[in-house]
Image (tube, rainbow, N blue to C red):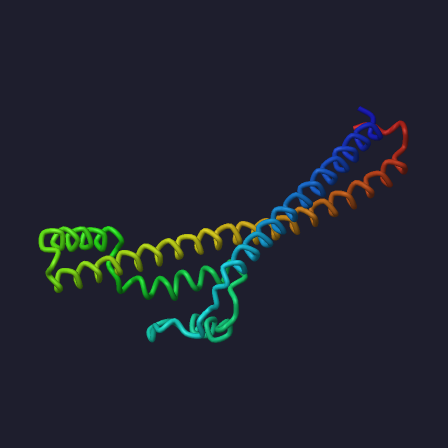
Length: 193
């Protein structure tokens, strides 16, 4: 095979791969932008204001610093959602029964009240049990939703890094292809490999 033919093939493959990487970088950047804007928009619409403290005296210094720095600010990023879900909601929900246990206790309290509907103590216990179920349900649902927003945001962050790496790879292949094209012009027509 003539060396010029081989160089042409390698150069054209390099240009094709560079174009492919540029397209991939654009799509990855679009994915990042979409994930970032969707998470930010959805979190902003919820108007959740981060507290300045979690109430957990045993937390690490970096968690305390995060909440101090972000306290009284609206939640707009996946990282804020994750920190709030894990270190604020998670801390407070840890002191409560699971939804299954709270639901079982609520059913038992409602059953006892239905057996004696005029008993004020049973009414108070049933109301308390219903309140706990409501709180645990809302807390766990909010925590799960915020952690899903965090996961979606984190995928966007990964897409951003991948877009940059792909763009650099595309530029590198394009430069190498240009160098190959220059080399092709200097290769003697009669050279073979």
